[in-house]
Image (cartoon, rainbow, N blue to C red; front, side, top):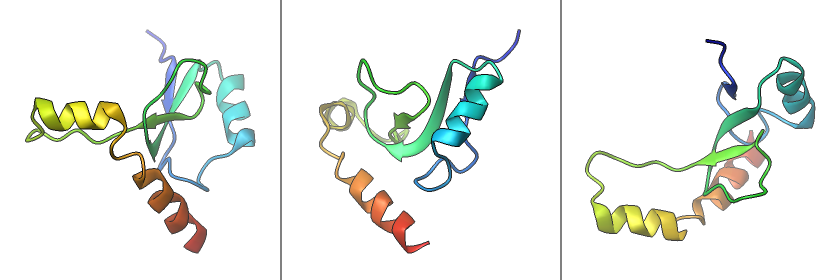
Length: 85
């Protein structure tokens, strides 16, 4: 079976852009994952899929907070860190 999704190496801000996504698309992929924090919503770019960390020790309450967006502020930290590199 041919893979349909791609994971950007590193995948953080400033490690991929529209040109990278275009190359991934040209190779026949239908989506690509980043390591940028956040929830994916309907209509978001499938070549910039955000993710969030879920640990083995996160219980239902913590997962509910993740899904509710309580930690979406972390994306700002990631962007600021990328600006320094």
